[in-house]
Image (cartoon, rainbow, N blue to C red):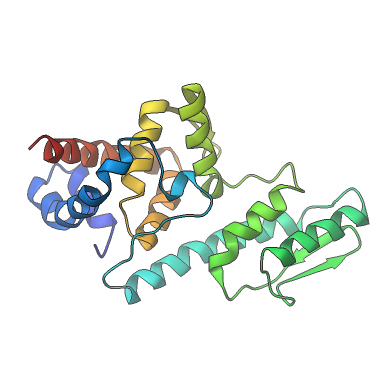
Length: 227
């Protein structure tokens, strides 16, 4: 599965042949291997911190796309953190210790008084870990891309959740929708999972586009299971 966008566009445009050609062959193969586990609930990476990723067959182009998304999220995180003032110097020091435990390099973050300044980052794989570490110390920190799993868990637990997207729009996710989102997300390759989370948390238009994609993927999956 090389690109997520062609599959989404085919689904939206009701291009059944394009959807089947670009998506179903690989999608169904991956799902069939995991469907028994999925019947027992949402168990894959979007709802578990340790993560379980499917391996892409071709990675060079996808890695470029992945790094681009994670780099943009790092820039957004850096903007939030660099403008933030901790109440005390000790709080800033505690946050720095958590960043170091999360694996951030010595030159990627520095503490000055009650502030922390994030610099450039070479290993974007740790962006989520950095966010999680800072979230414990910064109550105001909220970036939808990193909060998707939390919102899905809450929707499944309580029946629904109001999720704030990156543009400030609020959307409602019901429990069944949350399960479907997690189910489709977890069949994608790691790179396409990142693109998926980026698209579904961006704005209302992209959210609706991804829900359309999820619904059509679930319909096809259920049809395949019934055969």
